[in-house]
Amino acid sequence: PIDRTLPQIDKVRELERLSAENMPIVNSIIAEIDQQLGTTSKASFKGAENILKKANRESIKRQAPDYDVEHVRDALRFKTELNHLDEFKVMVDKVLSKGLEIIKLDTGKIAKPKEWGWRMAAMDIRMPNGQIVEYYASPKELGGVVKDAAHAIFSKWRNATEGYRNAHLAEYERDLQLSNQLYDQAWQAYLRKVGQDESAVLASWKNLEASVGSVTRSKLSLRSSASNKAAKSSCFVP
Image 1: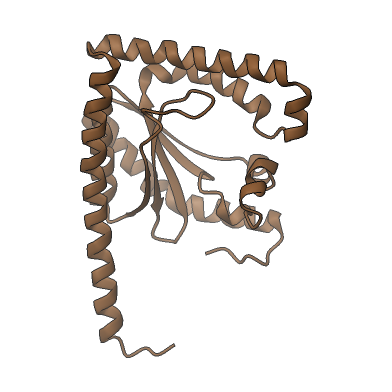
Image 2: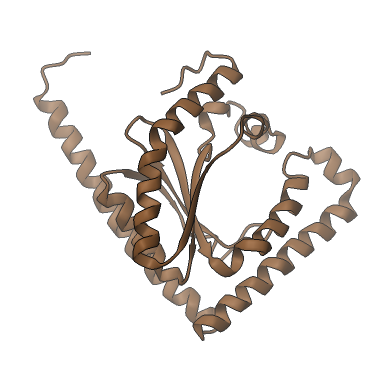
C-alpha cells in the first residue's frame, strides 16, 4: 500500500497513517486476549527515527539490498506477556477469528533463541488496509525489567556496523553474554513456575507449533481457494 518511489520520510508518514487506521483493531484484539487470559498486552508504533534506522541498517541491507521503509513489518507491533506458552494458540485463534490473515508464523525462537537469547514467538498479520504488522509473545518472566535491561543492551549494538563491532569485539561479546544470562535466568524462572524441565516444555511447544501451523495453513488454503473462484467468476480483465 506504499508507493515505493516516495522519499523515505514520506513512506514513514504513510506507515503512520496506516498504523493509525489499524490501531483500533489491534487494541480490540489485545483487550479481548487480556480479558480471556488475564495477561498483559501492549501495542506501540515504532518511532520515525527507529524506522529509518532499521530501513538503512547495514546488517539487513547486506542480506536484502532492496530493503526499505515499506518492508518494516514491526512499525506497528503488539505484544502479550504469557502466563503459559500454551496461550499462544489462543492468540492465533483470536487473530483468525477477526478475519485477519496470518502470513507468517515464527515459533522457532522459543526453543532456539537468536544470539541475544530472547525466547519469543511471533506472527506477521496482514491488516485490512494492506499493512503487515507484528504480534509477538513470550513468557511474562522474560518481560518487565528483564526485557528492559536486555533490550537496552541490544539497542546499544543493533545499528552498529560490522566494522564497529569488530573494533569493540570484547565489549560486544561481554554484552552478548550478559543478555543471554538475563534471559536464561528468566527462562529458568518460567520453568520453575510451570513445574517442568526444559525438555518437557519444549516437547509441548513442538506439539503446539504443529497445531497452530495446521490451522493457519488451512485458513490460507481456504482463502486462496476463495480468491481463485472469485477470479474465475469475475468479468474484470486486467
